[in-house]
Amino acid sequence: MATVQVSEAEKVYIMHGVRDDLRVDGRGCEDYRHMEVETDVVSNTDGSAKVSLGHTDVLVGIKAEIGKPKPAVPNEGYVEFFVDCSANATPEFEGRGGEELGVELSNTLYKVFNNRHSLDLRSLCICPGEHCWVLYIDVLLLQCDGNLFDAMSVAIKAALFNTRIPKVQVSEDEEGGKEIELSDDPYDCMRLDVTNVPCIVTLSKIGHRHVVDATLQEKACSVASLLISITHKGLVTCVRKLGVGSLDPDSIFEMTEVRNTGTEHPVQTHTRTHTHTHTYIYISEHYSYFFI
Amino acid sequence: MAVDMRLPTARKLISLPGSLSNAEGKHLVVPGDVITSDTGFMRGHGTYMDDEKLTASVAGEVERVNKLICVKPLKTRFNGEVGDVVVGRITEVQQKRWKVETNSRLDSVLLLSSVNLPGGELRRRSAEDELSMRDYLQEGDLISAEVQSVFSDGALSLHTRSLKYGKLGQGVLVQVSPSLVKRQKTHFHNLPCGASIILGNNGFLWLYPTPGHQDEEAGGYYTSLEPVALSDREVISRLRNCLLALAAHKVLLYDTSVLYCYESSLSHQIKDILKPETMDEIVMETRQRLLDQEG
Image (cartoon, rainbow over the protein chains, first blue to last red):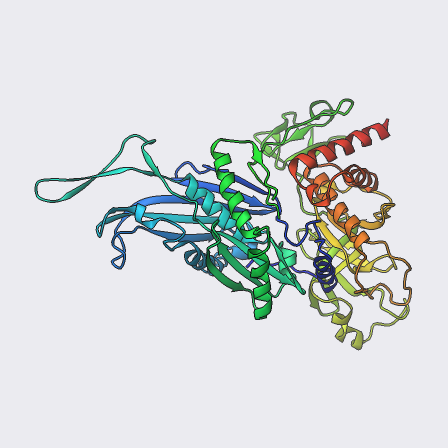
């Protein structure tokens, strides 16, 4: 992953800042940088979104194609992830440099999104066992400034919200062969239900505390981080530990506990605000704040 | 916890009354713009001849010195000159030299013979010193230094032969384009708001708590790892966000502009400074104050 060099003294400064709940950019431990979401940015996709979080820039494009369902689940469609690490983000990604990270990121995205709880895969079915919609979700990293996963999950959710899948009609001719007819009207389309699509919250352990939305500098100070993907109902679809260090079971518990108990439900509110934002985007509100 | 999400908005261009607008004050060009089709001029940096016409190859401001036409780019790598103050990061420790990343096109070098080692200025560099170079400066460390000379290929040779230069301790590094840093007599400032700043000519700005007393003996290679007071941290974080706001609006950075921006940001929370609408407001106030001060 893209890394920056940080001197020992800078690390000490950052760690003491986290301890005092005042990070280098003035945020508290549980503050996100402000996020900009733009949908429908790439015209030759079925749905797209661009998210920038600080200097992290992620572009997501979704293409729907007709394919064959997987034999194990004949009445469901499926999603495919591909993460492309552009060399614009960091020179390390030049040539095949970004491949390893790309594969790692897309594998994680599979775990997070490819289950029946987050996306209604049955709605992607056209003809059980024969035809289904396959969603190719392509993620392009344009700039890396930490917290890739959270930005990616928001971008994917926004792009899924934006996705229009053309309606199809299946007709049968005399010999029993099936014919698929696509509607000519571009507005005659199906929208995906994104309410249950999870958002990722990455918590990085720095010193004895943990922070959300770590910048690259802060990431350099943290030995391990915990990735939690959660839906607005509070359903956790994936938990993963990232980084080389280890996390004490107690601290994992503490990290999830802080997220899930108490009066505020920060993770859930995070995801909920997120879904709301989309409705706002849809009615083209200028911008919207959410304070909980 | 609050998450602030929004749609991207285009930034409004506001010209202040009394300031020179771009059209009248400066000749601004983008790559491919024809600067002049008069052949009587000489081709300088940032320009090329295209069909007998002098054309800009970078985006920036046209500068004319007699018959020589250059374009000074807005966003650029650092072109060092002798005497420039720079802040840099050690990338490699080599034989008798450190490689330093200073945002120039080639890595700069800091020779072992051009640093002040602890224990007297006129000490002979022994083989032991060479072996313990990593004890003074190791990969990732930040230093402040001055450009001693420029090699023929444009690489810089640095020196830290003064007590004001040397290894940097706790603080925050902010990176901006070198063209935004105003050249001044001094680039070290103890700001009255309670923090100090080094405005490196290379666009690396270093914010640190104002040191109480200078430890002469250490020769600038001792760093304190004592926690910085919360009040100092707040000032430094605020200054950091102010610097980024000014840089985003392409305001020239020097002690007065930084201080004015700091003062106009005081009515906002530190973390809000980087929100576009707050940034607009603060920077506009700063520009207005700078204009008023110029008279």
